[in-house]
Image (cartoon, rainbow, N blue to C red; front, side, top):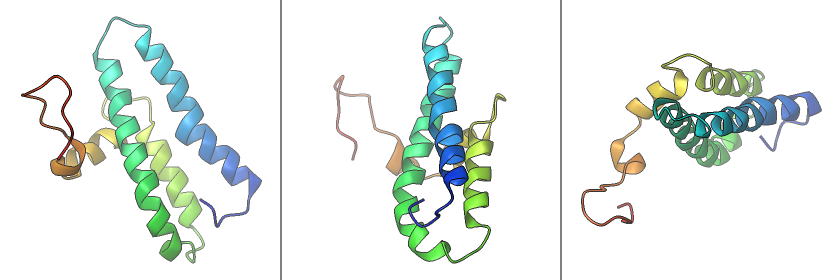
Length: 112
């Protein structure tokens, strides 16, 4: 994200990647249904992982002219207001060793 200099890109990136999901997460927390909470929790896991990986990927891929558009498209796919959006599929594909803690033992356990 640091290499693109377009203000429109930054506005879209923050709106699609953070503001809209934060608003939807707040709405989901106000309902009694757990499924919408899980959907947005999965999104935030994928978004955090994406931001960490983007630091390294941006050093390589910023040379490609459509890279910012693909990043925005990926975020839009992950936040799509459908039951199984992109974040769900990315979460299912990413290795469980990185993303899921073993919570069978203590109430609060450090991920390994």
